[in-house]
Amino acid sequence: MNNFQEKLNTLGGWVRRPRTKKRMYAAGVVLLVAWVVFRFAMVAAQNRMFVFNPTRDAAENGAVVEVMEMHRDAGVLREPLSVKNNRALVSGARLGHFRVGQTVGDGTIVSVAQNIDLDTGMYVVRTRGVTDGLNMAEYRATGYFIPTHALHGDVVMIYDNGTARARTVKTGRSDSENVMVIDGLGDGDIVITSQVADGARVRMKK
Image 1 (spheres, one colour):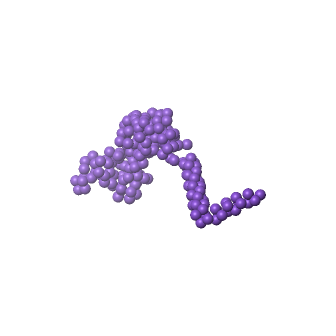
Image 2 (spheres, helix red, strand yellow; image 1 turned 180 degrees about the vertical axis):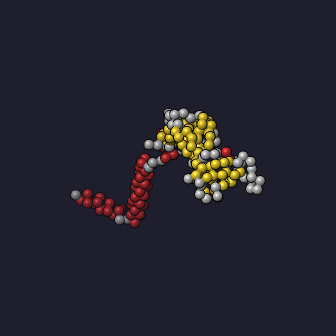
Image 3 (spheres, one colour; image 1 turned 90 degrees about the vertical axis):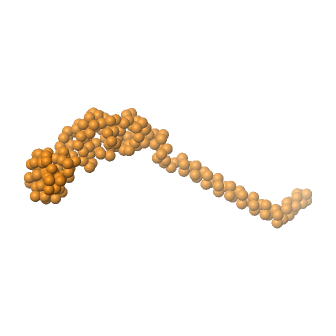
């Protein structure tokens, strides 16, 4: 018993030494810092597992794209026409967008000049029953209509079993929102309206 008490007293004296206290304090600080670093590393690892990464998701599963299935339908394209006293002036580049009998607001086009007006340098389009101001001339047709942003030059992107495929098409008339495709598309084709590269892996937005 005395031998044990002596050892205990010796240990207590060693612990109470200033140098020993400093070493124990330093060891405690090191352990505490190591524990904090470990916890932060674990939290970061868990966040990497659960935070959604769209770039990685697109690479692994394909980019999510918006699409529209093609059907030959009747549609309307609209061309702005500024009318005053049932008379409108248009440039040569726009002249082909107007024709006799075309609906403009509550009225119609009655004539489209084929010769330039020397006083204005423009072509005259005459209407009947159209109020003064900016109106929309309607062009009605049957075909395949797609958003203008889905057309890249003369190419559209087609959804092909999880892959985007470029297809060359021939277009007809268009307005600020839509364009009519007159060749290159058929019923059932799925046109990708999102921006995507040819050959990219894609999946349709649900």
